[in-house]
Image: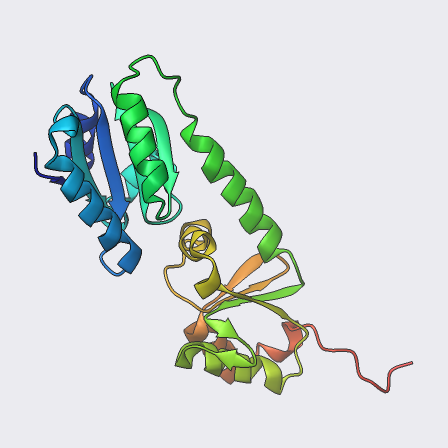
Amino acid sequence: MAITELATEQAFDDFVKSKELSVLHFYAPWAEQCSQVNDVLEEMSKLEQYKEVKFAKIEAENVPEVSLKSGIAAVPTVLLLRNSNVISRVDGVNISALTEKIKHHLNNEDAPLLNTTKTKESLDDRLKKLVNQATCMLFMKGNPANPRCGFSRTIVSILDSYKTDYKSFDILQDNDVREGLKKFSNWPTYPQLYLKGDLIGGLDIVKEMNELGELESILPKKESLDAK
């Protein structure tokens, strides 16, 4: 059985309401790890032992309402469902765990339901702590000493020009934060600058505030070495 591509919330709801085991991969075309999971599921769908399993994939960012209600914070994530209820999940690329869980739930129709909101809640708690980790927090690609994109390099240059006291977080090192913060802040791109836990904005807004002379007065400054 081939993998079904789901493109709408209605298609998702119709697919997972079956009493058969449904295996659904939330993916993004730009994430290489997702291709590996897709390949594995494609092969599994061809095997006789999994003929009772329904396999599907859904582009997470294209159907955000489904990703939100399913507790999807990052890709790849695979959910196992029966009768519209999530019974298990695998976050990231963990093929052995994925195979074991599919085999287990294929032969166990009385598995308890999984609380899909728990992971999202814990990620939200983590993001709240991160944005409040310092008075001024910069979420960027790379770090101030080694920015990994031009936008990050430019915003670091602006902050450093005012001797800003800030901490940074490299979103390339943590995909959960990278994807989760987009929804948390309702801001789809990086870098993101936070002040006292509130989003100031991305590079365009920071540059505009800088040009208007509105930036320097709100930024915390590094303590001078000459200060007593």
